[in-house]
Length: 577
Image 1 (cartoon, helix red, strand yellow):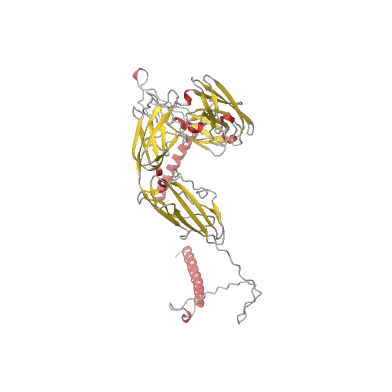
Image 2 (cartoon, helix red, strand yellow; image 1 turned 120 degrees about the horizontal axis):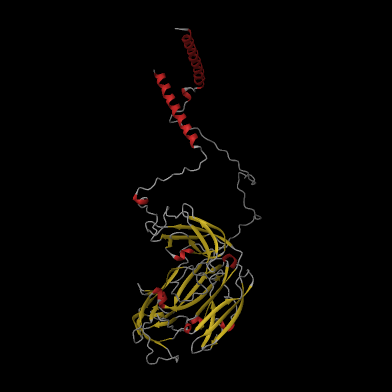
């Protein structure tokens, strides 16, 4: 064994010895700490107890071993008043009704609690909210309700049609499992109530004739029978039916359930039926049936026209605006009782709260003579909310007895109110599979979208879609705009291009486009055209991208890498040999 090998063996032995010594020292220490087997708990021994100490600070003195009698000077516990609790009974004016009759109901409400019951009322509609004609005030749902003091009994009576309370399955009318709500009420069964009365069904026919009063004499003359009038009747709980008048102007509904009904009329040629209650007529169907003579007339719009203007094209919020309307009668008869009513579709509409004088819906109305034009003006204030919409609007209707829907002329005007700004979040997309809904990957990238003012067509802004077809317009003046998409596109739905920008939130602009027929999308590559004279096309020169790197330098670097690889392979082979 040479000297180097001997030195390595000695070093290895020294290290092994040191490791054994170190391990032995640790093992001795561990064994020295190992508990006596008798001290190790067995599986049957209970685990050691854990004690948690909680310190509580109290101001009460320690109690003596003997109980102390109560002192006469100690404060007696206060008595808490019991909450309000209602008990309700229901009585009818009789126990048997015919379906077409009215009924009277008496509610007796007693508060047996020691606190007042506040805002006592029905918690939800008693019947169908659209067809229930009972007036439940002051117990109507959503109303202020009544107060019932502790120990008080209140009696309230209501009346209405039996048909509105009618249950056709068991032929009864009334209530089952109802309760009255009040402030602080907790749900319970003790305050529920109900009562039912027997009902005998009845029915009758509804028939009549409709005539067009062409000469305005208020009665049916020869040749005035009006064919094609659609007659609709509406009953309790959404019951409805429709008939059209024949050539003799007559219509017939057979075996209509007894009770109150509404009749409405609509003619394709514009004839209107002036009624005493808006555009509907109240009926009461009994076993004797109902016979109607319905007078129709030409709408006032046949001769009455309206033009509405504002005195300025731009206003500031809080500024006064003058609304002027010119009413013209182009007919051969005077139009009497003309009134005005302005639409209220938001806080940026004006004309709704001003005094229109005789033109007001509650006024006497005005007369516009044959061939006459009359002008009326009112003043209103531009509301602050108009800034958020970028405009102020006045839209009004004019006609005789405007609330009775005898036909009316409508006119409106608009002015700009600057100062508000909003934004638009847009998406331009094309459905490649015509699924009708947008799917990821269907956005049209790199198209320019130009925003035009809806009223002046002025260009306001433009943007280009990103790779997903999305775009954003920021800081756009509040108002109405129309978006135009550049390129070979048609619009699937035209009104998708129209947006109303407000200050409240970004408006969403989603336009579905289709490629024009002569330019399909995506483009389909065609065959390579031949070169001049039918020969193959000339070679195409491909330009490298301008990256800043030298082509010669790249070639030299490639040669060096090849040489380095060859040398590495040779060295490896020599080492193996």
